[in-house]
Image 1 (cartoon, rainbow, N blue to C red):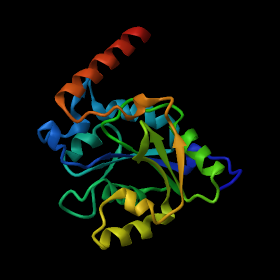
Image 2: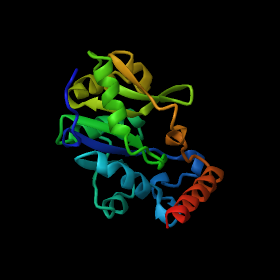
Image 3: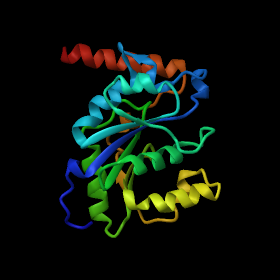
Length: 209
């Protein structure tokens, strides 16, 4: 990985939208309207320029996601097995050698997320994958993963493993410091957080409008 020029053409973006969203009353979080658009649309707007293609991992409302102009892939395991299962589906469906994952409920992605993750890989060679670090901890669903790790991930899932951190512990992980952009990790799990984000995005739209 060292000294490799990391191009967007090597990377598929995978938006993880396959959860139950119990804290949002079971609403499909990616489709919750924020500042006049589904929340996932804000994610897609920031993610698309950084990658070759974007996929959405979803387990319901598939046609609503597809209507946004993306390919939709569901978990290959039933029963909402968690974000790692969504990552595995994204790795399996990607037509590139790398996948960058982000959650559907964090629409304030930095425009240079891929650059930050790939630079961490290059810095920590021979790391196998890169994960964002901010707000004082690892942020496991913001990750840059090589597709060849799919076999390892599937083996872990087949063993009954669900926790991302435990799977990461099997591999060499580079941490990308995003402490200077904490808004990256502002996510929406409650109606109150939804309102906070809406106010923030409307203010930004007004500033640039």
